[in-house]
Image (cartoon, rainbow over all chains, first blue to last red; front, side, top):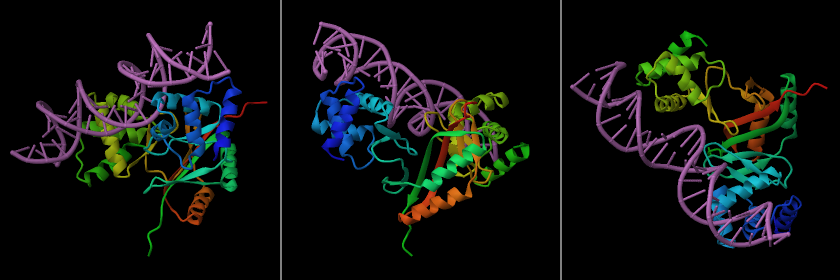
Length: 141
Length: 141
DNA sequence: CTCCGTGCAAACCTTTTGCATTTGG
DNA sequence: CCAAATGCAAAAGGTTTGCACGGAG
């Protein structure tokens, strides 16, 4: 993601009457540039490189606001703090490398469809779902 | 699950040199009789009806031990404390009713297979996974 | 007898919040 | 201007842990 994206995030927020402070601009920039899935304290660290006066509380408050607007997604993987990513990509699920912590995205329309079918058969409607594959690279033989 | 199951859990533990105390016996009984997916404090509450002197710390320590032995599974659903179930049923995933908190189990061999394939294509091997469908009952028209 | 397990209370860690102060629009 | 946002520090909430005592094998 580039700076144009950070601008887009700002527009989306402004449209909802949210003020763009120096702190928020920094957080938005960091989010828009993140290729990975950083957690709150990592975002805090990166944001402070841009704007020194960002507190962790503000990071959390901004993330909550962005999530409420559907601008970012929060993922809580097993045994780790929540991690965040911008919601600009189409829906996808995640592979978590259990050795490195790396996160890889993937999509599977087939799985999505199967999920709906299963829920329907049991009398439910899927509102949202979570699919995480905790993986490792196979050992060489 | 019935009392015979509680006994089976005890055997499994004893075999690993773990002592069966009154407290643990109570926790095992509660787990083996639970048809739902109780969290630690609910287990604590139920265990105390059997054996008054069970502390929450012991509940957590016993759950950790049981999980390490693969005797129970721990599920951390969104925004709620961890919930536990005995590992006697074949593998399954969960539907969570977002209105009632009810948990429904389901299996899908197709989805399992697709997961493996996807991981393999990306150069990974699935060690474990988590699939949760957050659902509601559809409104009547 | 001897450790393993226990209760209690304090510590932990991430996330949230109350309050007085600053600041964006 | 002044409601909205911030920093700080304290609180919250689930879970873990240090320590001295108790009980299973």
